[in-house]
Image (tube, rainbow over all chains, first blue to last red; front, side, top):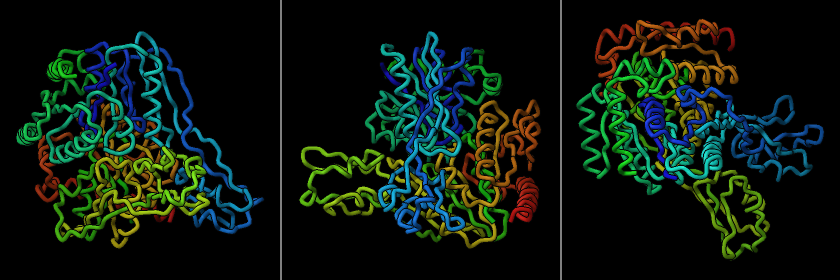
Length: 285
Length: 284
């Protein structure tokens, strides 16, 4: 199975718009949304059946039994995440700060601290003719990188043999992006012609290069700033990056998305340009 | 007074809003907490930059002292240590710097070393203090940088915190000390879905909040409908505007480039500060 991951660095450049178009164009049998703290791909995928839900347990959270606590303060002193607070001379764990490392449990001389399992997200698997794996990180939860790994694993387990899997990534360059990068065959970077977009693109390219993955670039909304579009094309040439094409800004595309449709479900200029980029992508994948 | 600007969805205009509001606020401070992809400095082009390296503690093992008990390996919840061929191997990238391995080692074979993960740049742009956190590429977590950014930047009357997209731990860290949360939404299907998420987040953290809708067109506005349905205050609407788009895509600050935008953002700022003061007067 070849895995194509769509990333951008900057948010809002059109990752999900392009991923959904690619999924429909390729008739992919496997796809996933790894943007677990703001997933949107399911809004476009016309899934009619309810997905199968699985609780995702992240790292455990500490819990202090104040009836055993002798207020020695060791746990608070040793916590690297400032997750232990005192309130009315009782020791309390800040649920959002606790990373579940277990140091407090180890240093407590009277066994007043326990680590308890905690649900950190909801894994969802749609299984029809295709497999669609997605998840929603629980609001206020931390471990998004591990959840991304679970989303990819769920997709692979559900479908063992298919040619192509398309994965919608998250913005940024941190842990969820790094988790989504591991094991993919190619990264398509969706850039936009703004100074911010260019800076973010350069950082995501550096991050992806660390994984030795094949990288290609396309530009979305290219006609909103032709000067910056030229800069991106020049950057790709200078750095020997495969440049796959550009998509115009298209108000029809915006309307399609707002109606829960993919941009290739209607005849529009953005959809046609995306189709060409898709054909080029398959050639090098 | 700390105002966090967040959105859930990327590309809705967090940086546009926080940069422009900071620019027109007398004696303000701008903090870019989007340490994975910081962009505010591209607009402010600050001068007199002072750079501060940020590092975290990573374990290092003296394999001569190690007796092979593997207590550290068993302890580490992040699987950052392994015992391979009679040696402890440490995987820096997944270490959360909790210090637990050092504590559980019975032979004192583990000590800590600093590992650089990025930097903070502090400079000035006209009347604004500009603070930028930059995570090194390849690093997983920028939280230590955000903590340091927010700890040391508390000397101005108004501070605008430009948050990362999403709703995960880095966003929580960025809004934790904020007095007010300004949610920037866009009137699209995705925009509303992600607005709903940050709306839940600010409620979990019990922060006063208001919404600013960017890229408004004349047709249906699902973000506005969402706010009305939930009874959320809409503090302003920024129209979809090609000229503003171009100014912004060229990393120019709209209020410094054009009087019309100065007027528009000034009226937004007026509304925001009134709201913030009201909220903080009720819940000091």
